[in-house]
Structures are given as structure tokens and as C-alpha cells.
Length: 253
Image (cartoon, rainbow, N blue to C red; front, top):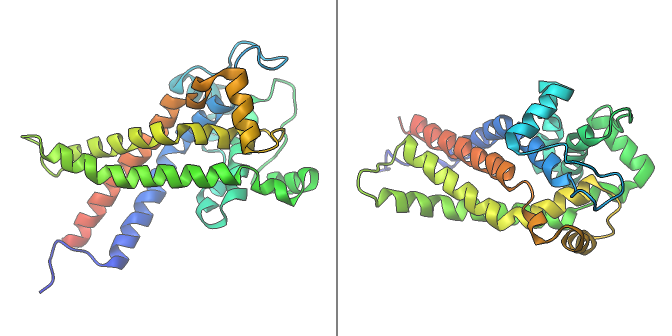
């Protein structure tokens, strides 16, 4: 006799896909803020770099919304949603579109939209440019996904051992935050390198990007945007795992 608490593979797949899509939509503004902060270079490193335009997660979100409109926070959501299928080129275009707001006032925008970004990159940089940052992108996804999946159940089981805690929404929320914190701490350096390489075509390789960032800005630069990154990944984990757990309960009846 089957266990009524178990759900089928198809139901679990649907729950996971729905939860991940909903989490992506809810947290893409935090991803946009994270990318802007990661691409923002230290004052004095390059000519023309003055006081930082963006300060903190909320400050970055407010600046983007004020200067570019609220919809700019969801820039790159279409190519971002396709990234899992088409992979690196869509992720690169997402980062380029999210970085558009960093251009100085008066400088024309490079891309009018996702399709224009693809065509412009192909025309100006060549087909291979669409796979810029492929190495750190693969490493970033592997590290963060492994850290999230490995730590969620571990954090959840640890919380459940504390007297008074039950397998409920609050526990799922705490476990999602814990998984997100662990994933960001482990994956932040390679995430910064990935964003830098995708947003700036002047880097020759992953090692070149890593070395220049380390020499010019110091080791802490690899944790630039840590709080927005945690805000994005942590919120993504919370929304994803909360949705996933509740969707499973619906199928269980």
C-alpha cells in the first residue's frame, strides 16, 4: 500500500518547476541590484571612477527605480527565464541588460532589448562572445545549487531537533534562509567573476578577471554585493522551498 504522504515523480517535478519559476519572478529585482553592485568598481581603480553610484541593496533598488523606472528591476527576466535551457548566452545577455543603467548620463544605451543585445554582441564581438564567462558560470551554478540542496535538509533537520519547532512554514523559512546564506558564502567569489566577465568584455580569461580584481581591489572585492546577493539567493530559497513544501502538501491532500 502506497504512503499517502508520498507524491509521484511527475507531481514533484511540477512542484519544483512551479516553485523555481515563482521564486525567480519574485527575486529578479534583487538579482538586478546584485549585478549592479558587483560591476561597480572601486573608486580610483579606473580613470573616471568617482563616488559609487549604488550603496547597499535598498539604495541600489531605489536608485534603479527612480532613474530608470520600476520595470527596470525586471530587466533581463525573459532571457533569464530561458537560461536553464539555452544556458550561457541568455545569462550573458541578462547581465548586459541589467548593467545598462551604469552608463553615465548622456551616453546612449547599447541595447534596446534582449534580441537587439544578441545581435549587437554577435555583430561587434563575434559568436564566441556569447559564451564569455562560461567557466565561472558553470562553476557558480554547480557550487550554489549543490550548497543549497545539500544544506536545506540539513538545516531543516537541525532546526527540528530544537524543542518547540515543528515541520511548518516558519521552519521552512529559516531553513531556506540558512541554505541561502551558506550558498552565497561559498559561491560569491565565482559569482563576482562571472558577473564581471559577462558585463565587461575587456577581460581575457577567468584567471585574468580574478587576478585583476584581486590586485586592483583586494580579496574582499570577491564578496562585493554580498548582502544583495544573499538577499537574492536567500529570498529565492525561501520562496522556492516554501512554495515547494506547500505544493507537495496540495498533492498529498
